[in-house]
Length: 352
Ligand code: NAD
Ligand code: ZN
Image 1 (tube, rainbow, N blue to C red):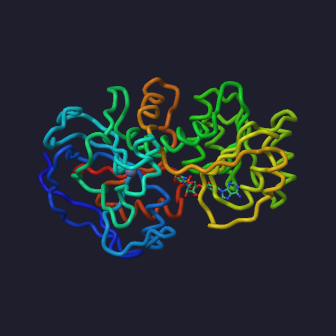
Image 2 (cartoon, helix red, strand yellow):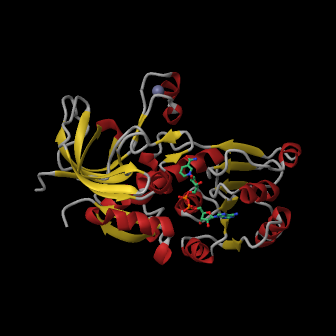
Image 3 (tube, helix red, strand yellow):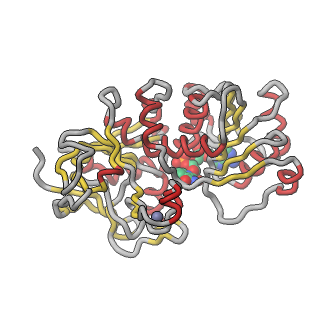
């Protein structure tokens, strides 16, 4: 049994250090988790390279990581939903539970949320970490701990596809084939989308999208969004997508998404790029293309886990790299550069 705690701490941008950390103690309603796997997300890379994402600015050292799974190591007072030894996926955002949003169930919109590795909140790229027990989701025996770490991005896909209202038989356009675009492809297929077109500017990422079940891929090789929208419709046999899920944040891609959408269709903005962009808003308005944002997820972990347990979604092909906790700097570098075709880079937190 590993006795000491060790974590990956970001001191300021480009200053990542391995450090001994205090052993966490579970308070009431909390559990201590022996961490198993933490996936690196684009946001972690932004904090490492820029020290900020928009208004979230690193002002004091912070433990990195938020796409995580582990094994329950100790129970705090009053915890009855979990037992020591349970394998769990950790839902990183713990809301206040008291505000209007929390009471409505849209707790992703809570303004008083603890969110792992979003300044100033710490955690969980370390050996031992404590978390609210009700935001630790038990994994069924057939779901691997590595898959458990991927329940975080998969939950983004569940939330986006729910907000998109995807139903059986629909045609879907997914813009951007990074991890988030790919999980949206997987969930859209599982929810019954029959034809999915995925776009990207990288041929390698489109190859993976095709392997994961996209019937059509479109390499974005032009800035002419209207012409590209025509090519999307061609790929769909002359029909336009019912739903567009934009997962790149690029202005050109949002423009394409709107032009491509069928009249009366739906466009969900998942990608977060520049704060302000120019888009064909009148085109969307007069064709009644609904535009919706998403922020994280609420009540999506259970569905994400069940999709994997039922074999309706396989997230394993997204995993391209694995590193030990002690190799975290190298892991972040791999995620940042995309070296070796990196898509999802995992860090294993147990002893080597
Ligand atoms: P990523 O950078 O790995 O993937 C983005 C992909 O988009 C890349 O493959 C890139 O080549 C591609 N791309 C760039 N320009 C493009 C264009 N013009 N057309 C088509 N594809 C293009 O990032 P990711 O981890 O997959 O995340 C995707 C986006 O989702 C990011 O903007 C991230 O901030 C956002 N995100 C939002 C939420 C939310 O709650 N709204 C949650 C997670 C991630
Ligand atoms: Zn709240």
